[in-house]
Length: 581
Image 1 (spheres, helix red, strand yellow):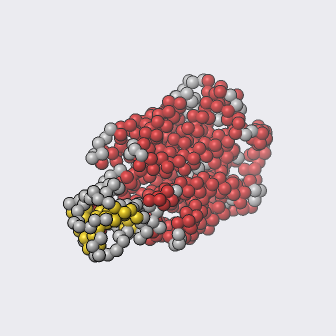
Image 2 (cartoon, one colour; image 1 turned 90 degrees about the horizontal axis):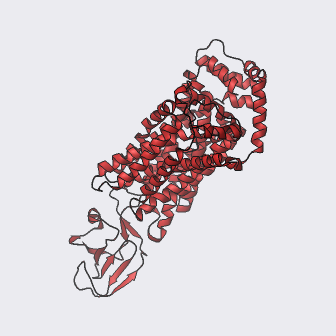
Image 3 (tube, helix red, strand yellow; image 1 turned 30 degrees about the vertical axis):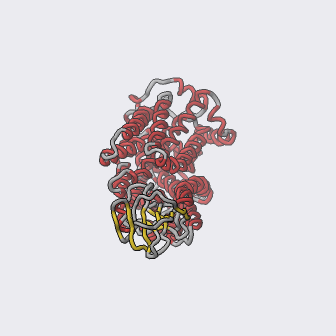
């Protein structure tokens, strides 16, 4: 495949007009993945609330302030420890907390402090919510507070579990049925399930439909990445593949914008979902990739796609399928290597990633980096709405800061090296986590800027770990290494929401955990070999020897090495590509 694809793109162009149209049409839909991944930050907001009043209220007292309506009290509400004192029209005086209410036995004067006997009751009349910012959220819709609060905290983890399962399922289906069909199904699924979420009738149907939405969103992101990389030539593939994630970040920015404009959760969900409509209406026009068609021996269909590419790119003499096939057949070395790789791959399993101390240490380090990258990415993103100031602007900036970080990652990993880029940015993210702990909480702008810097640094490390992982392992276990690493990444995305919830224990607990993991990952990365400028290894012996030779090759960088490596990688595990999100 490597030689035939090189011949194809040398003939048709590595990133011509046809590839540009296919690329931008496909990555446009990647924005919807970013939208649905982070939609819950506003949809599942828990506003201030108290128990429902047991009758008609004549007066409300909060500390030294008196009001006739609970809406007048919310601006003064500062802590979950607060309570309000209400006097009913029948003269009864009640203390109303968030999760309980107490009736005062002696109802003489309406005073905030009371030392007498009280009878405690549950919140049988429901809850009253502060609708100043949000008219309705899923929390207020189904009273996911107090003893049902854990249900609200499961909303994002169950979504991420769907992401994990969807990436595995649709990656495999795309190899069996084709990329085009999966792209059609998952993009339509995002629209259908996205709209369906807004019309769910209870919490359990809401979680179930969002789980299905997570599966198709993750499936689209994985398959779209493979799809565009099979249409883009070596010279542009590294940049094109990296910047798929930039459109994911734009989806996060859209969440912030829609959240600012729409304050009812089901309307908010509908507006987010209709972002997929333009692509759903035109995705049927996207062709199947010629390489998948060739792998299925559908030579006539592959030739039609090649001719279309040539016509769009204004190439007068497109290459023939017979020429591509003859290139592979006429290269006995490549053919023998392909056969050996296929047979070798079948004989290897996950235990080969621990075949000796050098490789085992490398595997543990790589897994830790994947986990840390995903954990840090989602902790910074999900925590952004709790930093103070304008939560919508915070999330927008957290998404926007990703756009330059992928450019930096592309340039740095080809100039400084993979390891020499990864180490400083991992350690920098750890230092930023520590720095944030020492910033006074009143300095909200400084805290937001520091969180943006943390997201930027973890984003750079996160952006290059896929390619670095593939270069660290030999051909016979490369797809196993990348696949297992991406699975660790998904585990990190499932754990991240629970990590964010630890803010209730200590406000800096999530940052402390991310900082420790990032520092540990950065230190362990020092022991990894540099792969810039080095040929891809084929055997575990060669990979082990590379680990023992610490000499850097950063001064011998061949052009487009990252793209060439990606070309090799796609031959052995395209279903594992870019599943980190």
